[in-house]
Length: 256
Image (cartoon, rainbow, N blue to C red; front, side, top):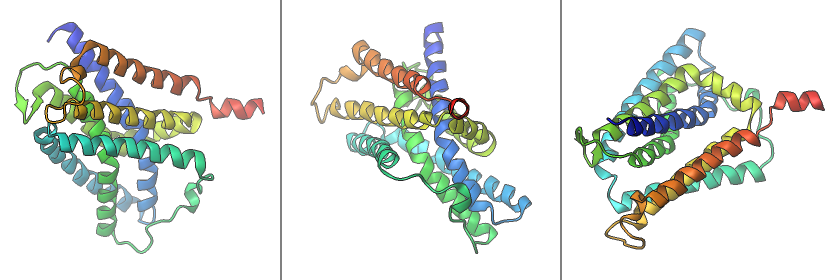
């Protein structure tokens, strides 16, 4: 693999790690609330079993998506979903009142151990859909290597998708507290993450409109240098704006 292609793959993987981390932070808080009624040792087991099942679901879904990714109806549904959840999050953030603190969030009272495991699994599966779709779309921007194929996905692209899903589960289980701390200091980063999700949805919409069965825009456009410059330029702008405009809450409180 050429050095430039390797760098491109590395960059996309870093973007996925950051996106997975920020999206997983709030999710990890929710999962913690779901298991907090259990004894300490059972909490760890419930999270482990629940996330293990969710990881198996993620991998199975990746294989399924790999065979359906070029079906324009699937692309259209994915694009609408990603744009919707981004707009829904931003709408709630800017129109709703402050959410209840964690201590007042409803717990899963009365749930036994295995029922809690099932709830953790279902919750992580729901959380995983947006990040999995984003991973697929970002991986599809990478150049093909021709090593092998998984469905309609190049083998190297599939490896990036797999690593993104695996890292997402690892972050949910072990590293989420670091991203929770980061979001507590710079809460605007979560908004930037959902802007990225929405922008990835726009990219998937471009793929849909360029599909041979639709033909609204030229089929070659999604692979063109112009579109790649636009896509990555906007994505980098969102990341930069997220850091520039997210003030450290601790410093703001000290100034006040």
